[in-house]
Image 1 (tube, each protein chain N blue to C red):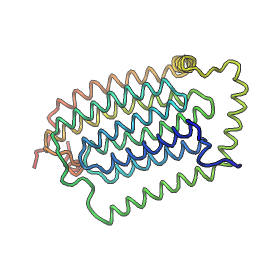
Image 2: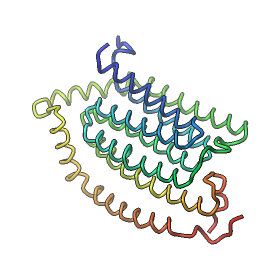
Image 3: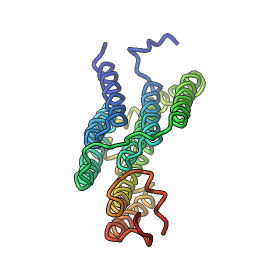
Image 4: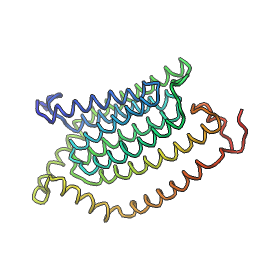
Length: 188
Length: 107
């Protein structure tokens, strides 16, 4: 068993286990900590896939910024444990679980069934492309990040600009929303 | 195809991992009642999609998938900010962050 294979199985178990922990803990703080662990695991998966820059962004944006936001809001609320953490109703809960199971079965079945036709063809194509690009392609993190930046600022520059506008709108809108008094109706 | 399932890590392994994580997130969105935990489960689903983007990006030697992940991460951070601001507003009025209070939010 090579280190790559061990790393994949270890990270897969870590991600699935901590993902389930997000779902099953009734204390939201524990859910937030499990989510942070999941984010770190996903960043490590990105490193095993040679996406170094994206792994760094994942650590900074998710495990840093978004998790701090979640934990700060949770501490603002002062919730120890929830009275009714899961949705009530046995029949509706069973229907939800059945639909989730059906979806997972369909996805995994589809992936396994498509293995020979689509993915086999894909990996053959990928091998050819990799052979063609082998001269200029280097696997060092520097070169990969440089290529990513080149594509981001040339081919996808309009998406990048639109993202900037969106973030400005979101920043202003969030402040306005947090300052509002919350609708026109009266509390019960 | 004589690949060993446990020792040859292929694209399928990453896709199955991604779909399992997505389904966990979906179960959380359907089953939990705390608004903040629901937002966390949405983040889980977005991460699952990111894994499959990166896996396809590596196995097809195409950088566009990583650009897409970059965009998804930015949108996810913005979505978390808006969702948490809404949760703060709901908490200020009802002193509770349960999803069942969303039906009173008219106006």
